[in-house]
Amino acid sequence: MKHLKYILLSIALILMSSVLYSQEDSSQSDKFDKENDLLLAHFDCKTDVDDLHSMAALATILANDEYSVVNYYAVAGAYGTQGGLYVPPNELMTKAFGDNWSDAHADFEKAVDEVYAVAVEALQNGGDVWVAEAGQSDFTAALVKKIMSEKPEFGVSERFHVVQHSNWNEESTSTEDLQFVKENIQYHKIADGNAAGNGTACYRTEASIKPKEYLTNSYLKKVWKLAIKLANRYNGSEGRYNNEAVEKGGLDFSDVSEITWILEIDNADTVTGFFNSLR
Image 1 (cartoon, one colour):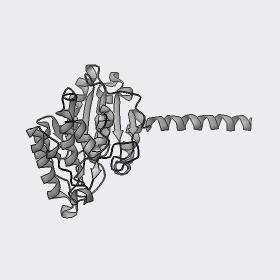
Image 2 (cartoon, helix red, strand yellow):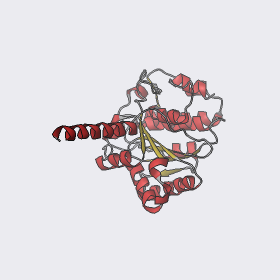
Image 3 (cartoon, rainbow, N blue to C red):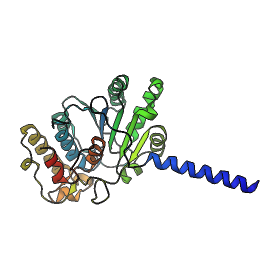
Image 4 (cartoon, rainbow, N blue to C red):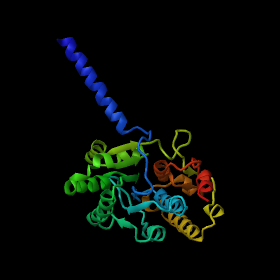
């Protein structure tokens, strides 16, 4: 009987491991439906200025004819337990996304309510929700809890997807919230977008690449000009994180690696490849 117990215990452990692995598998079995699904871009803006470049990069994607149909909503201030000063993005968020965003830094609960309304509408219309976690998962956890409480019939465990690329972001999420999203919705962990050669697009470079040289859209040129201006102003300022790529005149929109993964954008694995593929 002891041997049988050990065998059954081993089988149970194997099954548990396979479930945990599948939750963090970087393979994309589910596909984003551009016609029906909702893309949520959650930016922490604390304390790295890479979010500012990432906002401009997302605006670049959405301005492309192929992705202009994407239903999206953005959130600023979706940070977790990390300390340090906030990087004020409001001017850029408005220029890049108009009114299509919420300010969780100014009012967390109001932002949850606003995003809840957007997410519920998408779910009611038959779409799934995809979160590009350009930060931590605390805001996402609050949003999902509200939907599960008020709209349990939607079955968010199968229709709500989170994509995360950063170990540091996970470590800066409250333990309870990280465990909640991993256990209750579809959690996709992809390789870090700050590094090349790991299977994920690398959108961080110290090379002096000028977005305006790749862009013909005057609106996008203004968005990038503002993003770079603000990033240079706040990078390393008053104890904020000093992003060396930005300091050296480069670009860092590494969080957008999650979005290009979700949308399956081809030939965009590098910074130059990104701009060339979205001309």
